[in-house]
Image (tube, rainbow over all chains, first blue to last red):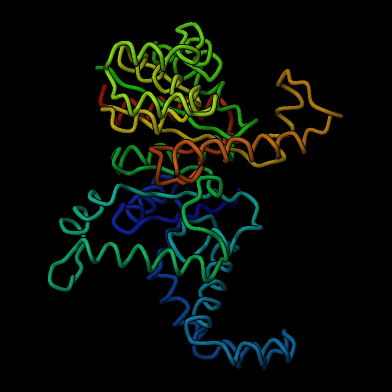
Length: 195
Length: 195
């Protein structure tokens, strides 16, 4: 059975790591934002998506005119969405970020996960475990800015609110531990999809 | 170790049942809205709370004047909150409803849970499993009204939004099954509280 697990996560919550572990335990592919972006770039999506699509005449003239007029960030989002749809079409996978819950919302066998943690715990995790260059080493500021960025990005591209429990099959506070979160998500998936 | 599990749930999600099962599996007391209300009534809280408190001189004159002027629903909420605090003080328990997450927010060893399910699933559950008298058998209307009532009640008494993932340790879509939700919550609690 083909299925997809999509994970949104607060910055510094360890959600990406949890996603990677879940993919390992289920023996399926793992994609994060970086991998999705690389694939989109390699495919020339972000540069040439509009022209190619227009050449293939698979879309209307109106649509290609519309695409040409879009800002780069919008075109990149569309390119990434295309990559997400293609990888999820091809095989079972875990996808972290990229608004994949929204992009794949009509897909069968979709499990939606949200990972969060209290602010102070996330600041601590970023400081101790992430390899980020943070201006003035002000980690609190940095996490606050990343939070805002993620919420705004999600709202802009999905028109939905960030972090509503009702939008997910399972949400977890990762303070309980990365391993236990991974185990709970795996158990939920196996029971929900019955395999 | 003394701890409390507080559960908020969408109407028709089976959250009360999950709470009861979790309490059984952990061997601790279970309280739902009805039991909390009964206890509040028996203690004479809702009728005599103000007078008694004033007689005990444990609060200021200003506070007792303030209480006397409150509408019945507010006095009832205060009485129920008092019951919730007392039962959670006495022994480990699962409490469903009553904004217990808000009432106990400063308590140690507190695990916060939210249970939800898609609208159509909840309508089906209410129709097939709940013993409710529903006007004109219009179950959709009924569930919609109950949703609004719960959201409004929660916002009024807690000043918080209903159903934000970040406010809970674990949230679950109960479509995965009552038993699996119960098992996941038990596992989370045992790992989070390390017992």
